Image (cartoon, rainbow, N blue to C red; front, top):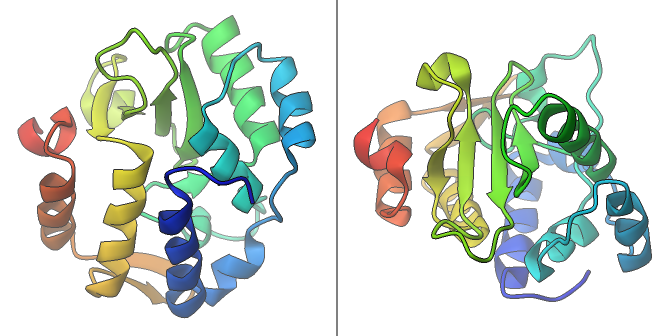
Length: 198
């Protein structure tokens, strides 16, 4: 795995998923080499940050199956991890071709129902490296709202929710306590609009 500031959180996430959701851990694809990551993102013409190299070199998302509920593949509510190939495909289709969101946003997680968690790659932006939610149905508009202060805080939120039993697995499907999830997420992501104002 490529080292960066999120390496300890990624390592801990692996331990937590292995403990609380072992079936999902088996579904996560092996991580990619730096060369493989470079090849896959070449067509998207984006420059990933070091922590995104860490993420995709740890695990390369999941491949979902039509006959298995999408909730089975969620690491957190609405959060299915993209494989890098699928993330690039989504970026090229939804951003470059259909202009659903700006080209400085790169997809990391999705719900399968139109919700996408996007990472801001624009170093000049005040929300650089923050995670924003694209969800016209949930937000009632096509604009994005920040939802996690950073990739690190997203991972910390997920880890805390599993450890506090706010997230649990019932018959292979992620369940969660909405109020407790909101409390933890808002405390760990105080700069993100979603938890503070939604």
